[in-house]
Image (cartoon, rainbow over all chains, first blue to last red; front, side):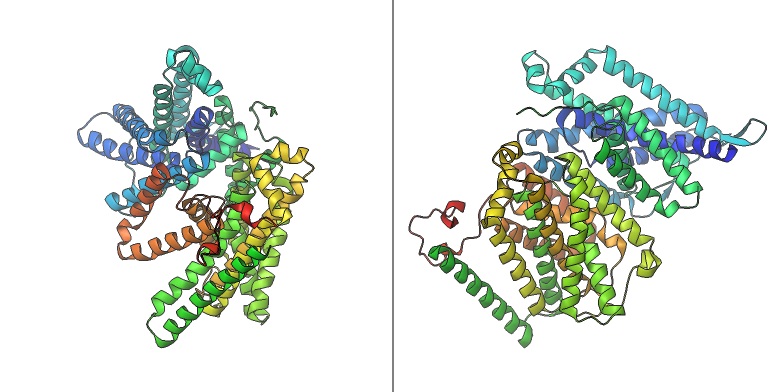
Length: 301
Length: 321
Protein backbone atom coordinates (compact mmCIF):
# COMPACT_ATOMS: atom_id res chain seq x y z
CA UNK A 1 0.00 0.00 0.00
CA UNK A 2 2.78 2.37 0.94
CA UNK A 3 4.59 1.37 -2.20
CA UNK A 4 1.47 2.13 -4.18
CA UNK A 5 1.15 5.59 -2.62
CA UNK A 6 4.84 6.23 -3.25
CA UNK A 7 4.34 5.42 -6.93
CA UNK A 8 1.24 7.59 -6.97
CA UNK A 9 3.32 10.53 -5.78
CA UNK A 10 5.94 9.84 -8.44
CA UNK A 11 3.20 9.51 -10.99
CA UNK A 12 1.80 12.89 -10.14
CA UNK A 13 5.06 14.63 -11.07
CA UNK A 14 5.22 12.87 -14.44
CA UNK A 15 1.52 13.51 -14.85
CA UNK A 16 1.97 17.22 -14.18
CA UNK A 17 4.37 17.44 -17.09
CA UNK A 18 1.88 15.64 -19.36
CA UNK A 19 -0.94 17.81 -18.07
CA UNK A 20 0.91 21.05 -18.79
CA UNK A 21 1.72 19.96 -22.35
CA UNK A 22 -1.76 18.53 -22.86
CA UNK A 23 -3.31 21.91 -22.04
CA UNK A 24 -1.61 23.46 -25.06
CA UNK A 25 -2.86 20.69 -27.31
CA UNK A 26 -6.36 20.88 -26.02
CA UNK A 27 -6.59 24.68 -26.20
CA UNK A 28 -5.28 24.83 -29.76
CA UNK A 29 -7.52 21.96 -30.82
CA UNK A 30 -10.50 23.54 -29.13
CA UNK A 31 -10.02 26.76 -31.04
CA UNK A 32 -8.85 25.83 -34.55
CA UNK A 33 -9.39 22.03 -34.61
CA UNK A 34 -5.72 21.42 -35.38
CA UNK A 35 -3.65 18.65 -33.81
CA UNK A 36 -0.57 20.77 -33.30
CA UNK A 37 2.15 18.15 -33.60
CA UNK A 38 4.80 20.83 -33.15
CA UNK A 39 3.66 21.35 -29.58
CA UNK A 40 5.96 18.65 -28.19
CA UNK A 41 8.87 20.45 -29.80
CA UNK A 42 7.94 23.77 -28.25
CA UNK A 43 8.21 21.87 -24.97
CA UNK A 44 11.75 20.90 -26.04
CA UNK A 45 12.65 24.49 -26.99
CA UNK A 46 11.28 25.69 -23.66
CA UNK A 47 13.42 23.16 -21.88
CA UNK A 48 16.57 24.35 -23.65
CA UNK A 49 15.83 28.02 -23.03
CA UNK A 50 15.31 27.09 -19.39
CA UNK A 51 18.64 25.26 -19.35
CA UNK A 52 20.64 28.16 -20.75
CA UNK A 53 18.96 30.83 -18.68
CA UNK A 54 19.35 28.73 -15.52
CA UNK A 55 23.07 28.27 -16.27
CA UNK A 56 23.51 31.95 -16.95
CA UNK A 57 21.60 33.09 -13.88
CA UNK A 58 23.34 30.60 -11.57
CA UNK A 59 26.70 31.84 -12.78
CA UNK A 60 25.53 35.39 -12.09
CA UNK A 61 25.19 34.30 -8.49
CA UNK A 62 21.47 34.64 -7.91
CA UNK A 63 19.74 32.64 -5.16
CA UNK A 64 18.23 29.30 -6.38
CA UNK A 65 14.58 30.24 -5.95
CA UNK A 66 15.09 33.38 -8.01
CA UNK A 67 17.01 31.39 -10.66
CA UNK A 68 14.12 28.97 -10.94
CA UNK A 69 11.48 31.69 -11.15
CA UNK A 70 13.40 33.80 -13.64
CA UNK A 71 14.31 30.89 -15.90
CA UNK A 72 10.69 29.76 -15.87
CA UNK A 73 9.56 33.26 -16.82
CA UNK A 74 12.23 33.72 -19.51
CA UNK A 75 11.53 30.30 -21.01
CA UNK A 76 7.76 30.81 -20.96
CA UNK A 77 7.97 34.26 -22.54
CA UNK A 78 10.34 33.24 -25.30
CA UNK A 79 8.42 30.08 -26.08
CA UNK A 80 5.15 31.94 -26.33
CA UNK A 81 6.80 34.32 -28.79
CA UNK A 82 7.93 31.25 -30.74
CA UNK A 83 4.42 29.84 -30.60
CA UNK A 84 2.95 33.08 -31.96
CA UNK A 85 5.57 33.22 -34.72
CA UNK A 86 4.85 29.66 -35.79
CA UNK A 87 1.13 30.31 -35.81
CA UNK A 88 1.51 33.49 -37.87
CA UNK A 89 3.96 32.06 -40.41
CA UNK A 90 2.84 28.48 -40.82
CA UNK A 91 -0.75 27.99 -39.64
CA UNK A 92 -2.43 31.30 -40.39
CA UNK A 93 -2.08 31.04 -44.20
CA UNK A 94 -3.79 27.65 -43.96
CA UNK A 95 -6.81 28.66 -41.97
CA UNK A 96 -9.08 28.33 -44.99
CA UNK A 97 -7.54 25.17 -46.45
CA UNK A 98 -8.20 21.55 -45.53
CA UNK A 99 -7.39 20.26 -42.09
CA UNK A 100 -5.08 17.60 -43.44
CA UNK A 101 -2.95 20.33 -45.04
CA UNK A 102 -2.73 22.08 -41.69
CA UNK A 103 -1.81 18.80 -40.04
CA UNK A 104 1.00 18.13 -42.51
CA UNK A 105 2.26 21.66 -41.89
CA UNK A 106 2.26 20.97 -38.17
CA UNK A 107 4.32 17.84 -38.80
CA UNK A 108 6.67 19.95 -40.95
CA UNK A 109 7.07 22.56 -38.22
CA UNK A 110 7.74 19.77 -35.74
CA UNK A 111 10.58 18.36 -37.91
CA UNK A 112 11.91 21.86 -38.47
CA UNK A 113 12.18 22.63 -34.76
CA UNK A 114 13.71 19.23 -34.00
CA UNK A 115 16.38 19.35 -36.65
CA UNK A 116 17.23 23.03 -36.28
CA UNK A 117 17.75 22.01 -32.66
CA UNK A 118 20.02 19.15 -33.73
CA UNK A 119 21.92 21.49 -36.06
CA UNK A 120 22.53 24.17 -33.44
CA UNK A 121 22.85 22.12 -30.27
CA UNK A 122 24.06 18.78 -31.61
CA UNK A 123 22.20 15.51 -31.19
CA UNK A 124 23.73 14.61 -27.81
CA UNK A 125 21.77 14.97 -24.62
CA UNK A 126 22.76 17.87 -22.40
CA UNK A 127 22.80 17.89 -18.62
CA UNK A 128 20.31 20.17 -16.96
CA UNK A 129 21.85 22.11 -14.06
CA UNK A 130 20.62 21.37 -10.55
CA UNK A 131 18.90 24.60 -9.76
CA UNK A 132 17.95 23.62 -6.26
CA UNK A 133 19.56 21.18 -3.91
CA UNK A 134 17.29 18.17 -3.65
CA UNK A 135 15.92 17.55 -0.19
CA UNK A 136 14.14 14.39 0.87
CA UNK A 137 11.11 14.63 3.09
CA UNK A 138 9.75 11.63 4.94
CA UNK A 139 6.03 11.28 5.33
CA UNK A 140 4.08 8.92 7.62
CA UNK A 141 7.09 7.74 9.58
CA UNK A 142 9.65 7.46 6.78
CA UNK A 143 7.61 5.02 4.72
CA UNK A 144 6.91 7.48 1.93
CA UNK A 145 9.48 9.78 0.45
CA UNK A 146 8.87 13.05 -1.29
CA UNK A 147 11.69 15.18 -2.62
CA UNK A 148 11.75 18.94 -2.92
CA UNK A 149 11.58 18.77 -6.72
CA UNK A 150 8.29 16.92 -6.60
CA UNK A 151 6.86 19.48 -4.21
CA UNK A 152 8.12 22.27 -6.43
CA UNK A 153 6.59 20.64 -9.55
CA UNK A 154 3.24 20.29 -7.88
CA UNK A 155 3.31 23.91 -6.66
CA UNK A 156 4.32 25.21 -10.10
CA UNK A 157 1.60 23.20 -11.81
CA UNK A 158 -1.08 24.29 -9.38
CA UNK A 159 -0.06 27.97 -9.62
CA UNK A 160 -0.06 27.80 -13.43
CA UNK A 161 -3.46 26.11 -13.43
CA UNK A 162 -4.90 28.83 -11.22
CA UNK A 163 -3.47 31.52 -13.49
CA UNK A 164 -4.84 29.71 -16.55
CA UNK A 165 -8.24 29.28 -15.00
CA UNK A 166 -8.26 32.98 -14.11
CA UNK A 167 -7.29 33.98 -17.67
CA UNK A 168 -9.86 31.72 -19.31
CA UNK A 169 -12.73 32.57 -16.93
CA UNK A 170 -12.31 36.18 -15.99
CA UNK A 171 -10.30 38.12 -18.58
CA UNK A 172 -11.47 39.54 -21.86
CA UNK A 173 -8.99 37.39 -23.80
CA UNK A 174 -10.30 34.30 -22.06
CA UNK A 175 -13.86 35.20 -22.85
CA UNK A 176 -12.85 35.78 -26.48
CA UNK A 177 -11.10 32.40 -26.53
CA UNK A 178 -14.18 30.62 -25.29
CA UNK A 179 -16.33 32.46 -27.79
CA UNK A 180 -14.04 31.67 -30.73
CA UNK A 181 -13.85 28.01 -29.82
CA UNK A 182 -17.65 27.89 -29.57
CA UNK A 183 -18.29 29.47 -32.94
CA UNK A 184 -15.56 31.25 -34.83
CA UNK A 185 -17.79 32.99 -37.36
CA UNK A 186 -20.27 34.24 -34.81
CA UNK A 187 -17.41 35.48 -32.64
CA UNK A 188 -16.02 37.41 -35.58
CA UNK A 189 -19.42 39.00 -36.19
CA UNK A 190 -19.55 40.05 -32.57
CA UNK A 191 -16.39 42.08 -33.12
CA UNK A 192 -13.92 39.69 -31.56
CA UNK A 193 -10.47 39.87 -33.11
CA UNK A 194 -10.24 36.18 -34.00
CA UNK A 195 -6.64 36.28 -35.22
CA UNK A 196 -5.42 37.90 -32.06
CA UNK A 197 -7.38 35.43 -29.96
CA UNK A 198 -5.83 32.48 -31.78
CA UNK A 199 -2.37 33.98 -31.27
CA UNK A 200 -3.15 34.39 -27.57
CA UNK A 201 -4.14 30.73 -27.40
CA UNK A 202 -0.87 29.67 -28.99
CA UNK A 203 1.04 31.98 -26.65
CA UNK A 204 -0.58 30.54 -23.53
CA UNK A 205 -0.26 26.95 -24.73
CA UNK A 206 3.40 27.40 -25.63
CA UNK A 207 4.15 29.07 -22.30
CA UNK A 208 2.65 26.10 -20.45
CA UNK A 209 4.66 23.68 -22.59
CA UNK A 210 7.82 25.66 -21.83
CA UNK A 211 7.10 25.46 -18.11
CA UNK A 212 6.67 21.71 -18.54
CA UNK A 213 10.02 21.68 -20.35
CA UNK A 214 11.83 23.36 -17.46
CA UNK A 215 10.18 21.00 -14.98
CA UNK A 216 11.11 18.02 -17.16
CA UNK A 217 14.73 19.19 -17.22
CA UNK A 218 14.82 19.51 -13.46
CA UNK A 219 13.28 16.07 -12.97
CA UNK A 220 15.27 14.05 -15.47
CA UNK A 221 18.43 16.20 -15.65
CA UNK A 222 18.89 15.50 -19.34
CA UNK A 223 17.53 17.27 -22.40
CA UNK A 224 18.05 16.66 -26.13
CA UNK A 225 16.55 18.08 -29.35
CA UNK A 226 14.36 15.04 -30.02
CA UNK A 227 13.05 14.73 -26.48
CA UNK A 228 9.73 16.38 -27.33
CA UNK A 229 8.45 13.59 -29.58
CA UNK A 230 7.31 11.01 -27.06
CA UNK A 231 6.11 13.33 -24.27
CA UNK A 232 4.32 15.32 -26.95
CA UNK A 233 2.49 12.25 -28.20
CA UNK A 234 1.72 11.11 -24.66
CA UNK A 235 0.42 14.52 -23.72
CA UNK A 236 -1.79 14.34 -26.73
CA UNK A 237 -3.10 11.00 -25.53
CA UNK A 238 -3.72 12.67 -22.17
CA UNK A 239 -5.67 15.45 -23.86
CA UNK A 240 -7.85 12.94 -25.69
CA UNK A 241 -8.27 10.92 -22.51
CA UNK A 242 -9.64 13.91 -20.67
CA UNK A 243 -11.73 15.04 -23.60
CA UNK A 244 -10.02 17.16 -26.20
CA UNK A 245 -11.00 20.81 -25.99
CA UNK A 246 -11.61 20.62 -22.25
CA UNK A 247 -9.13 22.29 -19.88
CA UNK A 248 -9.97 20.35 -16.70
CA UNK A 249 -9.98 17.23 -18.90
CA UNK A 250 -6.38 17.85 -19.93
CA UNK A 251 -5.33 18.21 -16.31
CA UNK A 252 -7.11 15.05 -15.19
CA UNK A 253 -6.02 13.13 -18.29
CA UNK A 254 -2.38 14.10 -17.76
CA UNK A 255 -2.36 13.14 -14.11
CA UNK A 256 -4.20 9.90 -14.82
CA UNK A 257 -1.83 8.91 -17.61
CA UNK A 258 1.21 9.82 -15.48
CA UNK A 259 0.08 7.70 -12.56
CA UNK A 260 -0.97 4.74 -14.73
CA UNK A 261 2.41 4.78 -16.43
CA UNK A 262 4.35 4.97 -13.19
CA UNK A 263 2.34 2.15 -11.67
CA UNK A 264 2.97 -0.01 -14.75
CA UNK A 265 6.71 0.73 -14.61
CA UNK A 266 6.82 -0.01 -10.90
CA UNK A 267 5.22 -3.40 -11.51
CA UNK A 268 8.19 -4.22 -13.71
CA UNK A 269 6.64 -3.73 -17.12
CA UNK A 270 8.39 -0.49 -18.01
CA UNK A 271 8.90 -1.52 -21.64
CA UNK A 272 5.14 -1.92 -21.97
CA UNK A 273 4.52 1.53 -20.50
CA UNK A 274 3.93 3.31 -23.82
CA UNK A 275 1.82 0.43 -25.07
CA UNK A 276 -0.47 0.71 -22.06
CA UNK A 277 -0.80 4.45 -22.66
CA UNK A 278 -1.99 3.84 -26.20
CA UNK A 279 -4.22 0.94 -25.18
CA UNK A 280 -5.93 3.23 -22.66
CA UNK A 281 -6.32 5.76 -25.44
CA UNK A 282 -7.98 3.27 -27.78
CA UNK A 283 -10.30 1.93 -25.09
CA UNK A 284 -11.39 5.47 -24.26
CA UNK A 285 -11.89 6.27 -27.92
CA UNK A 286 -13.98 3.17 -28.53
CA UNK A 287 -16.18 3.42 -25.47
CA UNK A 288 -16.33 7.15 -24.86
CA UNK A 289 -14.87 8.98 -27.87
CA UNK A 290 -15.50 12.41 -26.40
CA UNK A 291 -13.18 11.62 -23.49
CA UNK A 292 -13.83 11.79 -19.78
CA UNK A 293 -14.83 15.45 -19.72
CA UNK A 294 -15.75 16.05 -23.33
CA UNK A 295 -19.08 17.22 -24.55
CA UNK A 296 -21.08 14.91 -26.75
CA UNK A 297 -21.64 16.68 -30.00
CA UNK A 298 -24.57 15.40 -31.98
CA UNK A 299 -24.05 15.45 -35.71
CA UNK A 300 -26.68 17.42 -37.55
CA UNK A 301 -27.77 16.48 -41.02
CA UNK B 1 -15.79 0.60 -72.02
CA UNK B 2 -13.65 0.08 -75.07
CA UNK B 3 -11.96 3.41 -74.46
CA UNK B 4 -11.11 2.35 -70.96
CA UNK B 5 -9.56 -0.82 -72.29
CA UNK B 6 -7.32 0.92 -74.82
CA UNK B 7 -6.22 3.37 -72.14
CA UNK B 8 -5.65 0.56 -69.71
CA UNK B 9 -3.49 -1.46 -72.07
CA UNK B 10 -1.64 1.65 -73.18
CA UNK B 11 -0.80 2.29 -69.53
CA UNK B 12 0.46 -1.25 -69.11
CA UNK B 13 2.60 -0.93 -72.23
CA UNK B 14 4.12 2.36 -71.05
CA UNK B 15 4.84 0.81 -67.66
CA UNK B 16 6.40 -2.31 -69.20
CA UNK B 17 8.53 -0.17 -71.49
CA UNK B 18 9.76 1.72 -68.43
CA UNK B 19 10.48 -1.57 -66.71
CA UNK B 20 12.45 -2.86 -69.70
CA UNK B 21 14.45 0.35 -69.99
CA UNK B 22 15.45 0.30 -66.32
CA UNK B 23 16.23 -3.42 -66.48
CA UNK B 24 18.55 -2.82 -69.44
CA UNK B 25 20.23 0.11 -67.70
CA UNK B 26 20.72 -2.01 -64.59
CA UNK B 27 22.11 -4.94 -66.56
CA UNK B 28 24.64 -2.96 -68.53
CA UNK B 29 25.63 -1.11 -65.39
CA UNK B 30 24.68 2.48 -66.14
CA UNK B 31 22.60 2.41 -62.97
CA UNK B 32 24.83 1.59 -60.02
CA UNK B 33 23.87 -0.07 -56.74
CA UNK B 34 22.87 3.22 -55.14
CA UNK B 35 20.38 3.89 -57.92
CA UNK B 36 19.20 0.32 -57.74
CA UNK B 37 18.40 0.44 -54.03
CA UNK B 38 16.76 3.80 -54.57
CA UNK B 39 14.54 2.27 -57.27
CA UNK B 40 13.55 -0.53 -54.90
CA UNK B 41 12.74 2.04 -52.22
CA UNK B 42 10.67 4.02 -54.71
CA UNK B 43 8.67 0.89 -55.50
CA UNK B 44 8.02 0.12 -51.84
CA UNK B 45 7.00 3.71 -51.17
CA UNK B 46 4.69 3.83 -54.19
CA UNK B 47 2.91 0.73 -52.87
CA UNK B 48 2.60 2.30 -49.43
CA UNK B 49 1.39 5.65 -50.74
CA UNK B 50 -1.12 4.20 -53.19
CA UNK B 51 -2.58 1.90 -50.55
CA UNK B 52 -2.79 4.68 -47.95
CA UNK B 53 -4.43 6.89 -50.55
CA UNK B 54 -7.22 4.33 -50.88
CA UNK B 55 -7.96 4.76 -47.16
CA UNK B 56 -7.26 8.47 -46.72
CA UNK B 57 -7.90 9.97 -50.10
CA UNK B 58 -10.64 7.83 -51.60
CA UNK B 59 -12.63 6.67 -48.59
CA UNK B 60 -11.81 9.79 -46.59
CA UNK B 61 -10.90 7.84 -43.46
CA UNK B 62 -8.01 9.60 -41.82
CA UNK B 63 -5.56 6.84 -40.90
CA UNK B 64 -2.02 7.40 -39.65
CA UNK B 65 -1.13 3.88 -38.60
CA UNK B 66 0.09 2.60 -41.93
CA UNK B 67 3.57 1.77 -40.65
CA UNK B 68 1.94 -0.69 -38.27
CA UNK B 69 0.55 -2.78 -41.13
CA UNK B 70 3.85 -2.44 -42.91
CA UNK B 71 5.67 -3.88 -39.91
CA UNK B 72 3.22 -6.79 -39.61
CA UNK B 73 3.88 -7.69 -43.24
CA UNK B 74 7.62 -7.21 -42.87
CA UNK B 75 7.92 -9.39 -39.79
CA UNK B 76 5.61 -12.10 -41.06
CA UNK B 77 7.38 -12.50 -44.38
CA UNK B 78 10.84 -12.25 -42.80
CA UNK B 79 10.02 -15.00 -40.29
CA UNK B 80 8.58 -17.16 -43.07
CA UNK B 81 11.70 -16.90 -45.23
CA UNK B 82 14.16 -17.07 -42.33
CA UNK B 83 12.68 -19.85 -40.20
CA UNK B 84 10.42 -21.80 -42.52
CA UNK B 85 12.10 -21.48 -45.92
CA UNK B 86 8.87 -20.41 -47.55
CA UNK B 87 9.37 -19.27 -51.18
CA UNK B 88 9.95 -15.55 -51.32
CA UNK B 89 6.89 -14.43 -53.28
CA UNK B 90 4.60 -16.62 -51.16
CA UNK B 91 6.10 -15.15 -48.01
CA UNK B 92 5.42 -11.62 -49.26
CA UNK B 93 1.82 -12.48 -50.08
CA UNK B 94 1.40 -14.19 -46.71
CA UNK B 95 2.75 -11.06 -45.05
CA UNK B 96 0.17 -9.02 -46.89
CA UNK B 97 -2.63 -11.36 -45.85
CA UNK B 98 -1.65 -11.29 -42.18
CA UNK B 99 -1.51 -7.49 -42.37
CA UNK B 100 -4.98 -7.54 -43.96
CA UNK B 101 -6.27 -9.65 -41.07
CA UNK B 102 -4.88 -7.01 -38.72
CA UNK B 103 -6.59 -4.43 -40.90
CA UNK B 104 -9.96 -6.11 -40.32
CA UNK B 105 -9.33 -6.52 -36.59
CA UNK B 106 -8.26 -2.90 -36.15
CA UNK B 107 -10.72 -1.50 -38.65
CA UNK B 108 -13.85 -3.05 -37.15
CA UNK B 109 -13.77 -1.18 -33.83
CA UNK B 110 -11.99 2.01 -34.91
CA UNK B 111 -13.78 2.82 -38.14
CA UNK B 112 -16.86 3.81 -36.19
CA UNK B 113 -14.87 6.84 -35.14
CA UNK B 114 -14.46 9.70 -37.53
CA UNK B 115 -12.04 12.46 -38.37
CA UNK B 116 -9.30 13.20 -35.88
CA UNK B 117 -10.43 10.53 -33.44
CA UNK B 118 -9.90 7.85 -36.06
CA UNK B 119 -6.49 9.34 -36.81
CA UNK B 120 -5.49 9.12 -33.17
CA UNK B 121 -6.84 5.60 -32.78
CA UNK B 122 -4.93 4.33 -35.82
CA UNK B 123 -1.80 6.10 -34.58
CA UNK B 124 -2.30 4.35 -31.24
CA UNK B 125 -2.73 0.94 -32.87
CA UNK B 126 0.37 1.50 -34.99
CA UNK B 127 2.38 2.29 -31.87
CA UNK B 128 0.94 -0.69 -29.99
CA UNK B 129 2.02 -3.05 -32.79
CA UNK B 130 5.49 -1.55 -32.57
CA UNK B 131 5.66 -1.94 -28.80
CA UNK B 132 4.42 -5.54 -28.95
CA UNK B 133 7.17 -6.31 -31.49
CA UNK B 134 9.67 -4.52 -29.27
CA UNK B 135 8.76 -6.80 -26.36
CA UNK B 136 8.61 -10.08 -28.24
CA UNK B 137 11.79 -12.08 -27.83
CA UNK B 138 10.97 -14.36 -30.77
CA UNK B 139 11.32 -11.49 -33.25
CA UNK B 140 14.46 -10.11 -31.68
CA UNK B 141 13.04 -7.36 -29.49
CA UNK B 142 14.59 -3.94 -29.97
CA UNK B 143 17.41 -5.21 -32.20
CA UNK B 144 14.88 -6.72 -34.61
CA UNK B 145 15.47 -9.41 -37.18
CA UNK B 146 18.65 -9.44 -39.22
CA UNK B 147 20.15 -11.55 -41.96
CA UNK B 148 16.98 -11.46 -44.00
CA UNK B 149 17.91 -12.64 -47.50
CA UNK B 150 17.97 -9.70 -49.92
CA UNK B 151 15.70 -11.28 -52.46
CA UNK B 152 13.87 -8.20 -53.63
CA UNK B 153 14.88 -7.43 -57.16
CA UNK B 154 13.83 -4.70 -59.55
CA UNK B 155 11.64 -7.20 -61.44
CA UNK B 156 9.86 -8.35 -58.28
CA UNK B 157 9.32 -4.85 -56.96
CA UNK B 158 8.17 -3.57 -60.32
CA UNK B 159 5.52 -6.22 -60.81
CA UNK B 160 4.29 -5.97 -57.24
CA UNK B 161 4.01 -2.20 -57.61
CA UNK B 162 2.26 -2.48 -60.97
CA UNK B 163 -0.12 -5.05 -59.53
CA UNK B 164 -0.88 -2.78 -56.57
CA UNK B 165 -1.53 0.25 -58.74
CA UNK B 166 -3.72 -1.64 -61.22
CA UNK B 167 -5.71 -3.40 -58.54
CA UNK B 168 -6.32 -0.32 -56.43
CA UNK B 169 -7.07 1.82 -59.46
CA UNK B 170 -9.59 -0.74 -60.72
CA UNK B 171 -11.11 -0.98 -57.28
CA UNK B 172 -11.58 2.79 -57.25
CA UNK B 173 -13.36 2.63 -60.61
CA UNK B 174 -15.61 -0.24 -59.57
CA UNK B 175 -19.01 -0.02 -57.88
CA UNK B 176 -17.28 -0.57 -54.56
CA UNK B 177 -14.85 2.23 -55.25
CA UNK B 178 -17.77 4.53 -56.02
CA UNK B 179 -19.27 3.57 -52.69
CA UNK B 180 -16.02 4.54 -50.99
CA UNK B 181 -15.96 7.88 -52.80
CA UNK B 182 -19.54 8.49 -51.72
CA UNK B 183 -18.52 7.87 -48.10
CA UNK B 184 -15.75 10.43 -48.45
CA UNK B 185 -18.05 13.05 -49.94
CA UNK B 186 -20.83 12.67 -47.43
CA UNK B 187 -21.11 9.75 -45.11
CA UNK B 188 -24.67 10.44 -43.99
CA UNK B 189 -25.92 10.87 -47.55
CA UNK B 190 -24.08 7.70 -48.60
CA UNK B 191 -25.74 5.78 -45.81
CA UNK B 192 -29.11 7.18 -46.81
CA UNK B 193 -28.51 5.92 -50.34
CA UNK B 194 -28.21 2.41 -48.97
CA UNK B 195 -24.44 2.06 -48.89
CA UNK B 196 -23.21 -0.08 -46.02
CA UNK B 197 -20.68 2.50 -44.87
CA UNK B 198 -19.02 0.39 -42.18
CA UNK B 199 -18.54 -2.51 -44.58
CA UNK B 200 -16.95 -0.35 -47.26
CA UNK B 201 -14.73 1.46 -44.78
CA UNK B 202 -13.47 -1.89 -43.48
CA UNK B 203 -12.98 -3.16 -47.06
CA UNK B 204 -10.90 -0.11 -48.01
CA UNK B 205 -8.94 -0.35 -44.78
CA UNK B 206 -8.25 -4.05 -45.34
CA UNK B 207 -7.12 -3.60 -48.94
CA UNK B 208 -4.86 -0.75 -47.79
CA UNK B 209 -3.42 -2.94 -45.04
CA UNK B 210 -2.91 -5.85 -47.47
CA UNK B 211 -0.70 -3.83 -49.78
CA UNK B 212 1.07 -2.07 -46.93
CA UNK B 213 1.94 -5.52 -45.58
CA UNK B 214 3.31 -6.62 -48.94
CA UNK B 215 5.32 -3.42 -49.21
CA UNK B 216 6.67 -4.08 -45.72
CA UNK B 217 7.72 -7.59 -46.72
CA UNK B 218 9.44 -6.30 -49.84
CA UNK B 219 11.31 -3.64 -47.89
CA UNK B 220 12.39 -6.20 -45.29
CA UNK B 221 13.90 -8.31 -48.08
CA UNK B 222 15.69 -5.27 -49.48
CA UNK B 223 17.56 -3.99 -46.46
CA UNK B 224 18.57 -7.21 -44.62
CA UNK B 225 17.46 -5.82 -41.24
CA UNK B 226 14.14 -4.81 -39.70
CA UNK B 227 13.75 -3.21 -36.29
CA UNK B 228 10.56 -2.13 -34.55
CA UNK B 229 12.00 1.39 -34.40
CA UNK B 230 11.88 1.80 -38.15
CA UNK B 231 8.09 1.35 -38.14
CA UNK B 232 7.20 4.08 -35.68
CA UNK B 233 4.63 6.80 -36.23
CA UNK B 234 7.21 8.94 -38.05
CA UNK B 235 7.18 6.32 -40.81
CA UNK B 236 3.39 6.59 -40.94
CA UNK B 237 3.75 10.35 -41.21
CA UNK B 238 6.22 9.91 -44.03
CA UNK B 239 3.71 7.85 -46.01
CA UNK B 240 0.98 10.37 -45.26
CA UNK B 241 3.28 13.16 -46.47
CA UNK B 242 3.78 11.32 -49.78
CA UNK B 243 0.04 11.00 -50.27
CA UNK B 244 -0.74 14.60 -49.38
CA UNK B 245 2.20 16.07 -51.29
CA UNK B 246 1.17 14.15 -54.39
CA UNK B 247 -2.47 15.11 -54.07
CA UNK B 248 -4.92 13.46 -51.72
CA UNK B 249 -7.39 11.25 -53.54
CA UNK B 250 -5.33 10.77 -56.68
CA UNK B 251 -3.52 7.51 -57.41
CA UNK B 252 -1.24 9.24 -59.88
CA UNK B 253 -0.57 11.88 -57.25
CA UNK B 254 0.40 9.25 -54.70
CA UNK B 255 2.88 7.75 -57.15
CA UNK B 256 4.36 11.17 -57.91
CA UNK B 257 4.42 12.01 -54.21
CA UNK B 258 6.17 8.77 -53.31
CA UNK B 259 8.77 9.24 -56.05
CA UNK B 260 9.29 12.89 -55.10
CA UNK B 261 9.72 12.22 -51.38
CA UNK B 262 12.01 9.23 -51.95
CA UNK B 263 14.22 11.17 -54.37
CA UNK B 264 14.29 14.18 -52.04
CA UNK B 265 15.27 11.95 -49.13
CA UNK B 266 17.96 10.16 -51.11
CA UNK B 267 19.57 13.23 -52.61
CA UNK B 268 19.49 15.17 -49.37
CA UNK B 269 21.51 12.37 -47.81
CA UNK B 270 24.58 14.26 -48.96
CA UNK B 271 23.75 17.03 -46.52
CA UNK B 272 22.94 15.04 -43.39
CA UNK B 273 22.60 18.05 -41.09
CA UNK B 274 20.36 19.90 -43.46
CA UNK B 275 18.34 16.99 -44.75
CA UNK B 276 15.41 17.09 -42.38
CA UNK B 277 15.45 20.89 -42.28
CA UNK B 278 15.12 21.20 -46.04
CA UNK B 279 12.54 18.42 -46.06
CA UNK B 280 10.41 20.15 -43.44
CA UNK B 281 10.66 23.52 -45.17
CA UNK B 282 9.58 21.93 -48.46
CA UNK B 283 6.67 20.38 -46.59
CA UNK B 284 5.53 23.64 -45.02
CA UNK B 285 5.91 25.69 -48.20
CA UNK B 286 4.09 23.07 -50.28
CA UNK B 287 1.17 23.06 -47.91
CA UNK B 288 0.98 26.85 -47.81
CA UNK B 289 1.29 27.46 -51.53
CA UNK B 290 -0.15 24.29 -53.02
CA UNK B 291 -2.29 22.57 -50.39
CA UNK B 292 -4.01 20.32 -52.94
CA UNK B 293 -0.69 18.59 -53.67
CA UNK B 294 1.48 18.34 -56.74
CA UNK B 295 -1.19 16.80 -58.95
CA UNK B 296 -4.35 17.87 -57.18
CA UNK B 297 -7.07 15.39 -58.01
CA UNK B 298 -5.66 14.28 -61.37
CA UNK B 299 -6.49 10.71 -62.30
CA UNK B 300 -4.19 8.29 -64.05
CA UNK B 301 -5.06 8.74 -67.67
CA UNK B 302 -2.87 7.34 -70.36
CA UNK B 303 -5.42 8.22 -73.02
CA UNK B 304 -3.85 11.62 -73.39
CA UNK B 305 -0.59 10.03 -74.38
CA UNK B 306 -2.22 8.33 -77.31
CA UNK B 307 -4.05 11.50 -78.35
CA UNK B 308 -7.14 9.39 -78.83
CA UNK B 309 -9.17 11.40 -76.43
CA UNK B 310 -10.88 14.09 -78.45
CA UNK B 311 -13.14 15.49 -75.77
CA UNK B 312 -10.36 15.81 -73.27
CA UNK B 313 -12.53 15.02 -70.29
CA UNK B 314 -9.91 13.18 -68.36
CA UNK B 315 -12.06 13.25 -65.28
CA UNK B 316 -13.51 10.26 -63.58
CA UNK B 317 -16.68 10.35 -65.72
CA UNK B 318 -14.90 9.27 -68.89
CA UNK B 319 -14.03 5.96 -67.34
CA UNK B 320 -17.46 5.15 -65.97
CA UNK B 321 -18.44 1.78 -67.30
